[in-house]
Length: 489
Image (cartoon, rainbow, N blue to C red):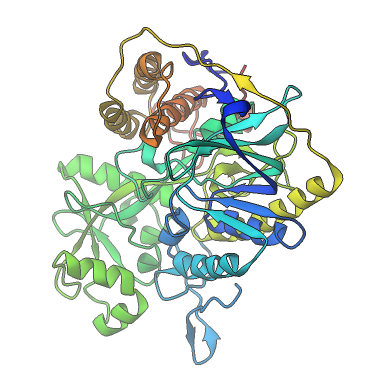
C-alpha cells in the first residue's frame, strides 16, 4: 500500500439528498467514448439508460484514435484495407477515413445512441463522486449539472467508462477531459486499482511550440516513414532490429535517448518519399494538420517527440467488467482487464472498448433485472479547512511538468521519491478544500492519481513493458511477475 495520502475524505463535496435534485435510472453510464457508447446501446435493449458526458459526445479520446454498425471502413477494389503497425508481426489494422478511425466509429455509435429512445443523454455533466451505501454497494453518483447545481442520480447499476489520465503529463495526445476523474472517484469509493505504473507513451506526436501534441499515426511508420535525428541521420536500427516498427516503448526510449545525446527538443519523421496525392487521401487528418503549419511533406521533415498516450492500468475489472464494488462495472481505458499486458499494441484499445463495452452493458442488465436497489437519505458533511489555499491552476501545471520529468518514459528511484514527496505536499493544501467547479475537482483527482502512479512506479523495481527503470533495466520475474494492486484504507 502507498503511504497514506493526505486526503482522507470519502467525497469531494457535501452530499445531502434532502436539498439536492434527484434523478432515477436503471443503468447509469459515465463516459461517452467508444466503451461508454457501446455499453449504453447494449443496456438500452433491456432497460432505461442515462448516459453522462463530461463534455459532449465528441470530446473523448476515441475521436482522436487513428487506426461497426455502418462504419465506413477504407477499402480497395471492394476489399477492406489492412495495415501494419509497430510491434505487429502481421498486418491486422483496419481504418476508417484514413487516419480518423476512432472518429468514424464514434460517429456511428453516437448516431445510434441519439436514435435510441431508452437512452437519456446528459451532456456537460461533471461527475464528482460515486455514491455507495453502508454495505459498500454503488447506488449512483453525484455531479454538477450544466446549470451549475448539484444533482444526484440513483442507479440500479453504474458503468464507469471515463477514459484515461493523459492530462497528468505536460506532453500528451489526450484531450483536455482526460484528467483521471474516473480513476480517482473509483479509488475514493473503495475500488481496487491495478497496474497504475503502466502509462504508455506514443513515440511520434507533432512537436510545434505552442500547439497541442497531435498524433502522427503509427501506420506512417508501418508504410515506410523513417525517423531521423537533427543531423538527418536515421537511428532506429541502432536501438532495435525492427527499426521504425519496434514496439512503442522501444521507439519512445530511442527518441528520448537521441534527443539527450544531440541536445535536441525533438527528432523528425521523414515521409518525403511518399506519394503526396496518395498521402493526402490515405491520411487526410495529418495532411491537413501539416499544411496548417506550412509543412510540405514532399520537401520537409515532420518534427516529432513522444507524449503520454494510453493508461494501461486502471480500475480492476474481471471478464464480466465487474469491479470489487457491487453494482459497479468498468470498461475501456479506465479499466484494468489485463487484456493489454504491460505494453498495449496499437489499435487494441478500440477493440477492447467495443468488446468490454458490450460485456459491461450485458452485466449491468443482469444486475438491474435481479436486484432491486434501496435508496435512502444521505447526508455527508465536509469539514471546513483552515489551511492556506494553493492556486489550482499553478498546481496543475506544475504537476504535469513534474510527472513528465520524474514519472515519464524512463524512471529512477530518486526522481520517483521526489515526485511522491512533492505531490504529498500539494495534496496537503488542495485535497482538504471544497471546490464548486470542475477545474478544482479535476486538480484534486489529478493529484490523487498522480500520487498512486508515482508510488507504484517506485515500488516496481524492474523494467517491464512500458515501465522502464534506468536503475533496474532488466525484467525480474522472480519478484515482479505480478500485478500491483491498491485499495483505499
